[in-house]
Image 1: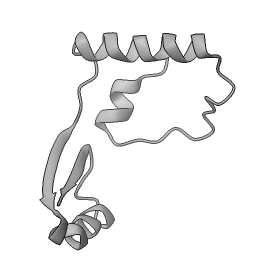
Image 2 (image 1 turned 135 degrees about the vertical axis):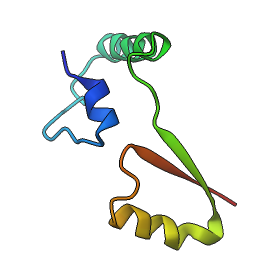
Image 3 (image 1 turned 30 degrees about the vertical axis):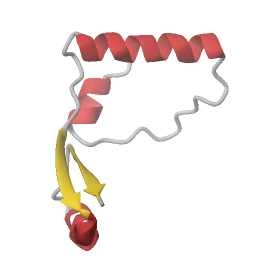
Length: 77
């Protein structure tokens, strides 16, 4: 089993992963597993950093400087 929690919390990447060959049933099973893990608290979404659209440049700088590890930015109009 892929350690998705550790990947998510540490802002890691998976290289070479292909899901395009999965069947609809396999995709549904994977989605169900992710939902169960979220519900059980085994995987939690990272912190969200809300920024206004006027701060898009700041968001890019934060990303480039590695300040967003494990967090995501939501740009709001």
